[in-house]
Amino acid sequence: MAIQVPMRETGASSCRRCSVFCDKVVYPAGCIASGCSRLYSYEENGRTYIGCLEKVFPVEIDLDLFRRAERTKSGFGGIKVAREPLSVCRCEVQRTFEHRCDRPCVNPDFLLSAPRRTYKVTARRGPASE
Image (cartoon, rainbow, N blue to C red; front, side, top):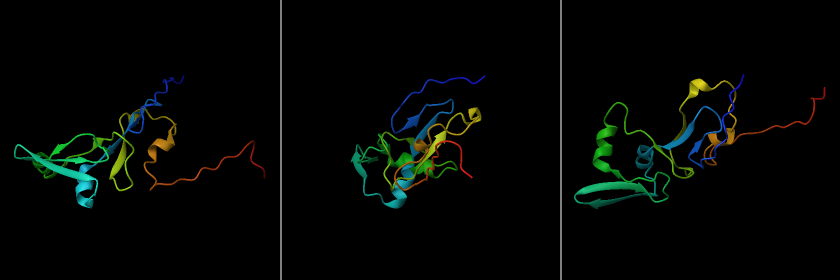
């Protein structure tokens, strides 16, 4: 017996259409490494903070704490996106409850982020002709 999960739209940042919860995350380390023109910084009280002008990630990050985290084995990590990532963003989809996956993704469009990824859909009506 299959369990029905109610479909919930949560915008560009996450998908809850099935029991596997998917979230898009962006890696600020990628913004710095690529020299992204949408990354800004400012100083306040002797600290430097960085953020995204496009608000792909909605928070401002203390640059010193970011650099300390980047020196660790796991690095700073990703931040859940607040809007659809730009084509230059280093991002991915994280699947929270992957062990619940018992069939193909019901929302494959969500897995394809930004126009840099393409896919082909082939549809047929009725039985295939020989």
